[in-house]
Length: 261
Ligand code: PGA
Image (cartoon, rainbow, N blue to C red; front, side, top):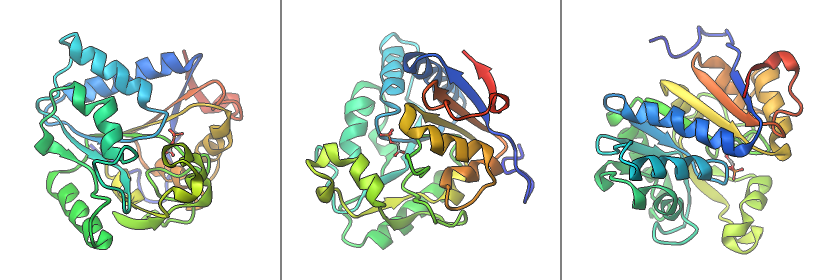
């Protein structure tokens, strides 16, 4: 399969607008379940509010005996620097709460950057090597920041960046304040896979909910790709689906929308 669009060319992102967030969650879980059932799945996972409903559906499918995670390997996108995996506000805790503690995934096949690594740069290199060893990611799920970040690739990140330590934008720290009591307590740095890693995934599903994402969605879908809008890099990938609710789609032109459900 030709994953990357030919250099310099852009491929329209296939946008589906859902009437409700619940319908979006259900469709996202179906999309993901099909990829988990494929041979040797290597699944790229995201945290945040957006995928919580999708994870709930995946857990329900597993409990109903319809989805086996036994062959599944997972790579999370990112983790805060300085946060222990055991801490309530770690992405490890998030993943356990919403998915891993409820399904038959082999802990040895679960990968999340170690936020508590003494040398975060070295941890980024270790994670990059792991990705290269087990990749490519067969299916990557993404949320999008209101500043259009993907993973923790903030505006201005070159599209060629691989796994690295990044400084979080103030907007991002404010959006994640709830887990840390106040935005000043949100770590200033994170380890994230880079945009180049994301573009190497075989298939990508990016999800957005709510009016606060509407402008990021519009810039991602309708404008020329630029590092100022990290998610716009996805136009250079030939297999990207975007699932949005009505609010997140509210600034899109009608002809940008491929499906309505
Ligand atoms: P959210 O975060 O799902 O909590 O809105 C998305 C993101 O920052 O990528």
